[in-house]
Length: 148
Image 1 (cartoon, one colour):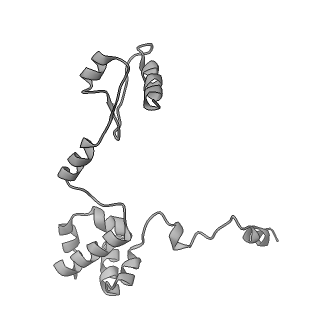
Image 2: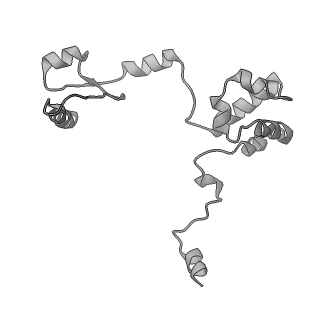
Image 3: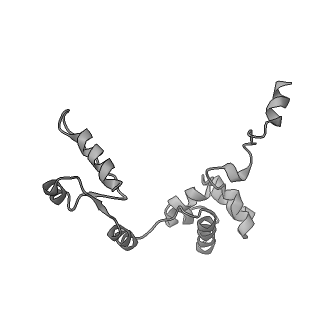
């Protein structure tokens, strides 16, 4: 009786819906025209998701028995299509993105000069030191100056 009540609640969703998964299973490559036998070979070699294909070096995929260079390229292309937003960029592309960063002032011109213009956005800056050295004050100042 209690199980039936749980299933009737609209906010409870089934977990086996593929849209809810935080990863794309490697089996989805068959929908893009990649042979089921090739997908099975990759799966047997330990690749369960499209992310795992993209994170491994190409030569490791070529070492999988039965996968040729063309098949590996096709699988990687399919994995890129399925995993939008999780791709790698070159160092040159990263440098171009870093040029667009803004620097937030710390409120102290000398400290900003030491930091190369202030605290850089789109990055992680770690601040550490002994107690009562002004770390919290610095963070509060940054919180105010970013809103200005």
